[in-house]
Image (cartoon, rainbow, N blue to C red; front, side, top):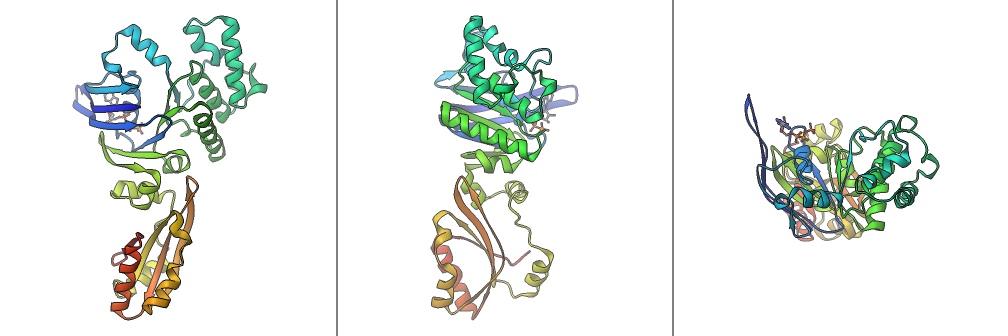
Length: 340
Ligand SMILES: Nc1ncnc2c1ncn2[C@@H]1O[C@H](COP(=O)(O)OP(=O)(O)OP(=O)(O)O)[C@@H](O)[C@H]1O
């Protein structure tokens, strides 16, 4: 378990005091993949770098498995760090070393014998699917392959926690997907906890269990990925989600909506088993309301169906209002599109 309490980082510069992280609190459970998303300058890198004390906090504590990292002597901190792996946007591989030697490098530093470290490095190279590239140099690898090496290297000391600093930001979509699949696989196989920072909601959607949205050094919203997608509260979260799930109505629908009386057009967000219930036929049968589907999409988050529908509800205003209440009472997120 990782418990961050009242964590702050202030940079004192000639231009003034920059409050990069402000009294931030966060808990991450063992085996979780936890995403932290925020815009540029929100404090993501500062936060993740503090989690292994690459950056010293100005105040607050970081407990990893009941050990407060900020209290450790430098020797104990070095040992604690071995149990925290990290992968980077630009891979940070040693260009003069082969894949095998890059992966075995942390073991060399930890004083592991040559035989043992070669055995371990080979196992990890196998795990990340690069068995046929062990003798290649980084320059001979694609971006996705370099990140696989970065992941294997980060796992060399059998960490409990893996930190990922924008690990897929410089990869194409296909390599991004294969790296995210690999992270999900190693979480399962090694029961790792993964904390990742990203500015891409697609990454959060694809592999995270929970997410925190960070702005100006503070968490403005957090929860399970499904909840955050289904019920985003802040404008920033909605903006991130709209990059993945298109909430923006096509112009022809905006025009149509504007011409309608308010209250007759609704956006419904469905999650999970709710997608299987016949709500629309219920409206027609029990509320004498015609429901015309104008727009919609259905996706999947963590294997759970998730979707939005925009309905044009036609009928007496009273019936329309009752049908909206019915949908809400069924736990659906219903938004009346008065203002598009
Ligand atoms: N070493 C430093 N000295 C002074 N200010 C810094 C330093 N590092 C970061 N900052 C400032 O702290 C704030 C947070 O920066 P940080 O790099 O953590 O944000 P970020 O969310 O990771 O941004 P990006 O997505 O652009 O990398 C910014 O205002 C940044 O300018």
